[in-house]
Image (tube, rainbow, N blue to C red):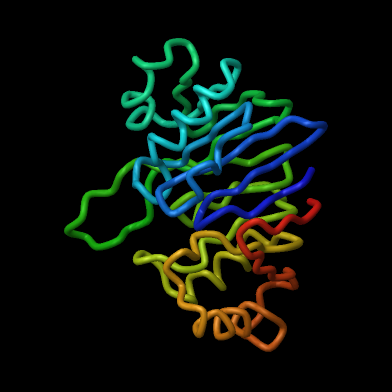
Length: 214
């Protein structure tokens, strides 16, 4: 499949001419979801869920559908009956030709005083895992881990340990919309061969619009 990095936490996957998009939020491009047949949303925070991005995709393609958790589905379902599906941890389904498994239940802790929202991650074709805003370990081998490299709820030591625990072949940065350009070489070094070590995983940073084969 072809993986295209979009803005912040959004990725676009294409296989046999069919397109699936995860987390077209407010920091991603206005047309990030347009052309997708399947849209997956990990949680309700606006950098992952932007209603206008999803509406644009659903209105452009009458066959397009959304899979997400209840808090997001409740905001879309009435406008698009039968096209918004609620999922949770342990579910499995097929969307746009991709086999999808759902892993995880809660957003990472930002601060004990801030209530945790629900959050799910998606494993696609047993190969590519996008955890949303959590350090969920799917409990099975992962080839490509979409790595939430910078967020109010994490620090680089936790990210290094997360890559070690998941042990993917490669880790590709997402959730990087707030990371300053001058900080990127620091993260690249920490997650690369000159850093503490991430269990042999290759680390990649792709500019928005860039594409790799996975």
